[in-house]
Length: 181
Image: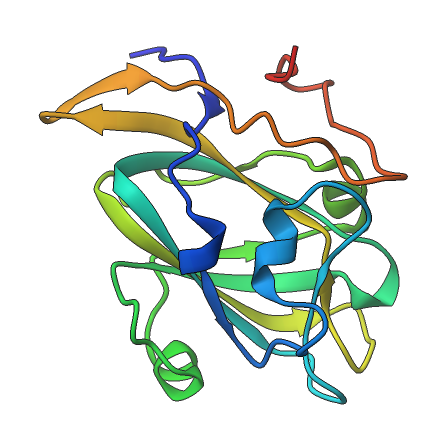
């Protein structure tokens, strides 16, 4: 089944997203905002645990993260439908998928493929940032999800978030077409 990979239709209410260990001035809502804002971990602790609820169940087949420098996340553990997860849970639990991000991945927002079979009925996504590229704090400028909206068990191609790419970053178009027209 060669379904088109498209950004998930804007089902995230930024006000509902939460993040453990976020810096007060740089909350998780910033990853959904325009401009140069960003999410940053609290002082001298690089770990983050994002909880992103969706307005309706979605199938997620890819993830894009924009960041840069030593503050960029490098290792992620992904979980679904565990909105009350804490750091101990994230450390101790086997992830549905582990992701390693390169500097190019986060500079260009390269789509990171996820196993759609494991991320098919996602009410909420938990992203545990376990490591970054060496800085004391971690920064995420923008987050985007690729996949499908699920409707009565059937999948349909989804409209895009239409989020602007963060200032000074690029959108990777080498592997797949750009979803933002």
